[in-house]
Image (cartoon, rainbow, N blue to C red; front, side):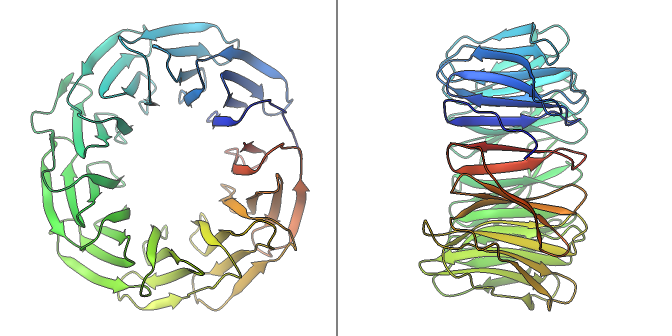
Length: 420
């Protein structure tokens, strides 16, 4: 273990700075930032309301923005000394929020309760908003990759696109009349995004105008719980265990619906980095599986991989797309495994059997693809060699509660983890 920080409350939010030198953690009503190399406290602890809802660093690592439950201010602090740079005041207390920086760091966008605000990160002035188009709590907000547009989605199924440069709401931002939105994903170039709805339809939206470019596409009969968007293809998965692939340009269903197993529910779908393989995670009582499919033909490449017990909690492709790792979360006290599969031929399967009691809550690849970190219910972490499956470190102990997440620093040399 490189570092372990003991806190006395449940961890609610955690963030690495982009350069990997700072770790910000929100626990209980406290926010604190540590130096990831020395373990020294850099700023804090600060009181932030009932508990921290969001933490985010600016792209250049110089500042940190955070918001707390029932506070009425979004705080922007110097990441070196904790000095308050801006106090972005709202007209109401925050019940839930989303915060993000524009890719160039010039703006901060916030979705608080049912309104959207755009702030100048240099002077702290609100330059757009508060915009009241949403009718439900905002649960996602993001800039498109070039920073020109903002997309926000609320619990009532309203999707809004905002022009971050012209300072106005797109006149065509509207709620889809078909069904509440359950899932959404941007295209890789940020020009489009797809939404999956409760009634099984997909809509492909123009992120610049807010118009539905294609759809509604009746891809399924049950709610779309997972989507992925790669180039001109969209894969979607449903609560009744079907996946489909549609052409993002025409809306044509080009593959599927494919039924995974009768009674299964899709929990996640993911394209491999090169788009040749689709991974699906599906589950039902006493039966859980990870399957790999040829993205062009729909033929199964590998799977199902049946776990000894528990649900598949996490799945991730390696950065080069050559392997995929899946973790499980099962009954407490059972021996849980990580399964590492070769994607190229579907034949090589490595099971990382650490003879370790306890459920795996999450799994994470290092950015260089050399390491895999697995987080366990028994308050520990194990780091494995991603090529051989051998345990390199651990069990790493020090947490006082189950470890829910761990992420590597950008240079793959450090690991930050959060627990209850």
